[in-house]
Image (cartoon, rainbow, N blue to C red):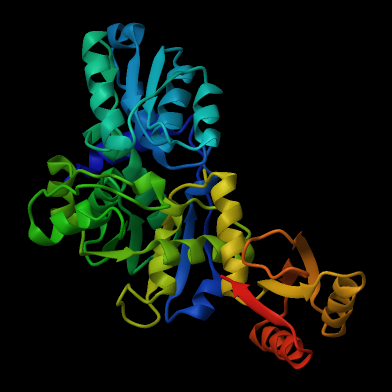
Length: 402
């Protein structure tokens, strides 16, 4: 594992730029679960994610010659911003290779620190291969996002901050390439081996979880998850070796569970957290941690750099799923007053119309009919049933969009 002395040295090295992010008790999550829950809010880090810790520690240790030539990194976004910020701090040229589908907010975040961005490949692993070749051709130092001991040591400083604040029984850590949990696990197990270290992967990016239980590095054929920060296809033998030594178990959550966790944090904790950062909360909400009741559990919210388009989709679907919004297609006779009659009926049950569309030309409509698509704000499952009953009672033909 990463020596504790290296993690402590990293903590001193990164102190000038790192925000000691809040580590706070989460009463609402505690009420929802059998545990006492604490959140380590790395989504509030300077660059919006924990990755700055490892990137800064690595770049701070470069020789003058290495700094002069510059650095290269491959990343879906958070490591990219960490490298770009650190390179800018030391006035080092930086080139970042990002997958072509990287959210614009992350691309712009990297550029804002003065780094050159190259978009290449459909996922992290393809961007990584290009970046490795680019670094060799241009004789630049490649800053690996996770399979580097200096990077892992930087990430492990999170554990030092947590343990300074609270005596915990378990810590829950997102896993993509494994650099975060390797660093955190190394620190935890050297300070207090009794603390459980639990990793969380996305179902659509299962490489590290599969490798952990098979005890050998296996890769995935593809990755697909809304948690783009942990969408890593291939397993690093270097991080796997440390994970096998320091991690107690790894659980997985699917995209629906991740989306619910993002919405829960936004609505109840007033925190904007990206998919990768929310996987620990998803595992908690869906009872996957299997810990003794009343355990003190620390969750690392690893980042908050979520694309606003993705966030809007998650909010919209979450409102429908929780019966606070419904979408209806109602067939009307296409004549004056028909729409007004429908809206007056909906007003009687306090259904607030937030969107409306009118279609009289679809091929499946009978002549003289029109379909009205209506988005409604509703007050729960019973309210929605009241609306359905009222429409049926008044002879309307309708169906719901889900």
